[in-house]
Image (tube, rainbow, N blue to C red):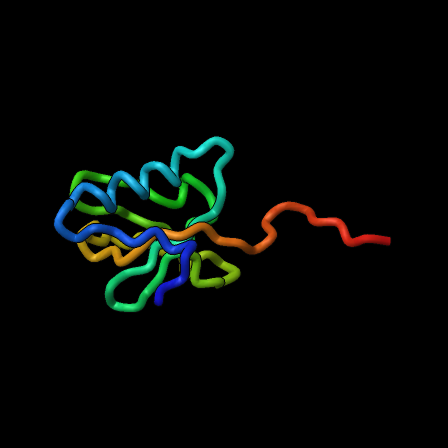
Length: 99
């Protein structure tokens, strides 16, 4: 059984992936989310400016971690290859520990 937080997409409705991605991108307040692809690859969207959604594709920015920025890339991916979209549960903001 799949994780309940993963919003599985109906493959018959090709607009479902785009609608769910757009809902996450424009959510107020924005919350980081992950796009899981059918290939097993995933994209972590930590800021709304990291993704551009089109009619049949999305373009996502990834940072490969190089200090000089040479590892930064944009990837164009088909919306039809999305397996699921899920929120990222890691603490993004400043969390305080009791003390």
